[in-house]
Amino acid sequence: MVEIRTPIHVNEAIRRVMSYAIAGPKTYVAIEDSLGHYLGEDLIADHDVPAFDRSPYDGFAIRAEDTLDASKGYPIKLEVIGEIGAGDVFEDEVQANKAVRIMTGAQIPNGCDAVIMLEHVELLEHVELLEHDRKTFIQLERRLRTNENITRKGEDTRQGEILVKKGTYINPGVMALLATFGYKQVPVIQKPKVGIISTGSELLTVDAALEPGKIRDSNSYMLLGQIERAGGVPVLLGQFKDDFTLCYNQVADALGKVDILLTTGGVSVGDYDYIPAILDKLKARVLFNKVRMRPGSVTTVAAVEGKLLFGLSGNPSSCYVGFELFTRPIIRTYLQSNHPFMRREIIQLGSAFTRPNPFDRFVRGKLQYEKGQTIAVPVGLDKPNIVTSLAEADILIMLPGGGEVYEKGMEVTAILLEDQTGATMDSFMHGPVNY
Ligand SMILES: Nc1nc2c(c(=O)[nH]1)N[C@H]1C(S)=C(S)[C@@H](COP(=O)(O)OP(=O)(O)OC[C@H]3O[C@@H](n4cnc5c(N)ncnc54)[C@H](O)[C@@H]3O)O[C@H]1N2
Ligand code: MOO
Ligand SMILES: [Mg+2]
Image (cartoon, rainbow, N blue to C red; front, side, top):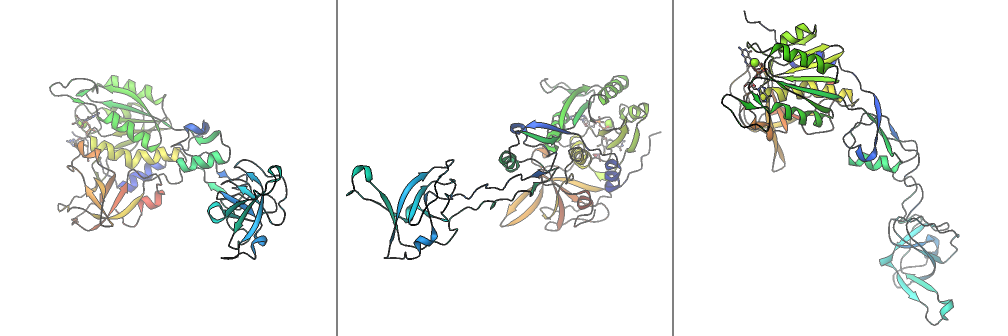
């Protein structure tokens, strides 16, 4: 007798998986290696930025009050008493009617409260004076306000501000902040090790020549990319033929080596689909083995020895979708991301789906931009065994199950696969459109 499975709603499946989510520990990486990690502590400004008043231009630091009488046709003259490059400090207090030549980024000398750009002054050299007594003057024909052209201390940020919250994805901008505040070593959340086991006697290695009845294992490498995109460290544990003892031993052994384990294939009701029996023998707690979704309805998730084991479908598109919906938020929660779920947006559907489906559909699609409108365009054939559609997909178009048909131009929800901002569990499950 073929086992009859009871399908559960996608949100219920997510809830069950998330009840086993754990947070990973903190560790440190060199700032050079921090891109793509999740920050392990709040990044708090420990000093003002900038830490001193500085010049935004190459020009002359002056005292605004000395320019009160300047106007078009009525120039005033200031004596240039020195020069400061970025990184240098002018030690003396600047007195009335004096100016200091200053470069962009240099600290404003004491006594000065405005900067005039090089292009806005005329430089006068008094050659009639003796060589050793030569003086330089600038002439300007406009009045400057106090603090004009000065980048004020603390303008960018103030000491004590939380600039980046713990659990934020480290992008190049966050790296700039880490460097600004002297983080040679960056506190990050340790990335989870995610093991991949491919099952199937039909599978060939990537470098093998095709043989009758066989296919190359594409799921392992697809999952490798998905794990990295989610922020985990993929661990390829091999591909195994459909042999119960062999697969059981591999799975049991792998559980000790990784934080999260993924298997692909062998999860349905076929004669050689051994994953359910392996879970049984491992005494794993099966959270679900059928979800009201297409593709990926056979996705099975179990908890064993405190770890989650994701029995993903062998069909490439089903495997892909099962990972994104259930494994990705587990990886992101491990990374202590504040937004472990994928962002969803309401977008216009690019083509019609006129055959109703009782299950919720997650159609591979891509964002297309037309005259200021964003359109969710399905890519490739919408079948679970399809691999080619995955290359173009940057969204999953959600089409809720039931009797409904979907016309071109209707508003639907798209899940953004490449976005790093993410979403909370609540906004993912109950966003603007329910499914
Ligand atoms: N009688 C039933 N048959 C099937 C059902 C069902 O409910 N009743 N469910 C179907 C659905 S839906 C799916 S999805 C698949 C799930 O199959 P399995 O997870 O058991 O996977 P396999 O049988 O091992 O393989 C399915 C398919 O995928 C190919 N495959 C497997 N591994 C890889 C890999 N690493 N790289 C690329 N392609 C892979 C494999 O050759 C098969 O074509 O079951 C349906 N059947
Ligand atoms: O699990 Mo299957 O992918 O629903 O097609
Ligand atoms: Mg099967």
